[in-house]
Length: 92
Image (cartoon, rainbow, N blue to C red; front, side, top):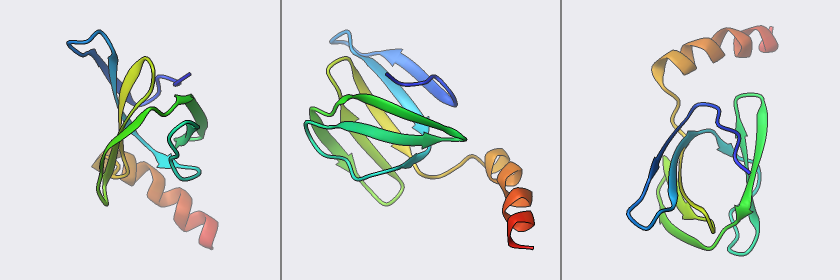
């Protein structure tokens, strides 16, 4: 199940949903195992991963039985600005 937090979704031609998620992987992606993603303060767990389609330094595209997921590690500028004061406070 994916929590719809900071995500966009569309249907693909094959009827699978497509999600664009901004977050971080909690553990490495493994085919056959669910993806565990940190989105804001929420931990999301997907159905088992069927395939890894693309992996770069800033994003991963993977497929589950019902969806194509595009996980972006780069926050939007507004998201980064919201997180900055919390990080500075935590360091003080």
